[in-house]
Amino acid sequence: MKAKLIQYVYDAECRLFKSVNQHFDRKHLNRFLRLLTHAGGATFTIVIACLLLFLHPSSVAYACAFSLAVSHIPVAMAKKLYPRKRPYIQLKHTKVLENPLKDHSFPSGHTTAIFSLVTPLMIVYPAFAAVLLPLAVTVGISRIYLGLHYPTDVMVGLILGIFSGAVSLNIFLT
Image (cartoon, rainbow, N blue to C red; front, side, top):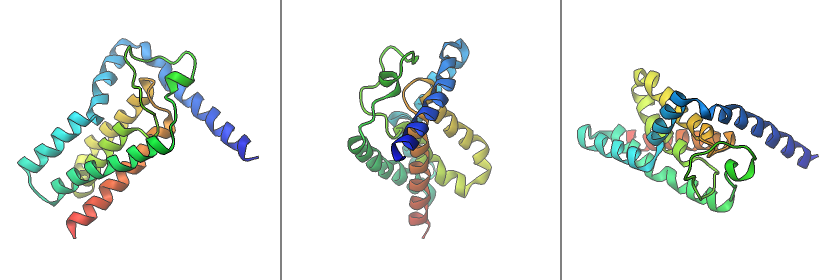
């Protein structure tokens, strides 16, 4: 019974993955998402956290930087404990870039990073959520679109990032 449920969920996830990844050949969308996905990368998120600390040193800036740093720990642990192969390795006909990633897919580090960075900002400055939330969600979708992550990789990254951001903000605001 449990194995059937797991298989059902995996099959549904694969269908969802393919429904997003199938649009990989759309030239303008491809260019946009290939660029935007880097907003969740280490270079971009670390630079933004440092800029926040330098330009607006506040408890929110410290919470963003701390959240980004701390959120990497469960991502690294999960990638070791649950070595899930990336979808372009597992699923036939996955569209992917020329130089795909070699590490494991679960959870999405890019999604975790962007959500860990923007969550404190969205909580303290709700007006920014109109820009930051779509940005973060689009980073997550881009990871699926580019053939690098399953939807659950992105969902768990989103949860880890939001949790890390909320806890970090609570630490720095008290």
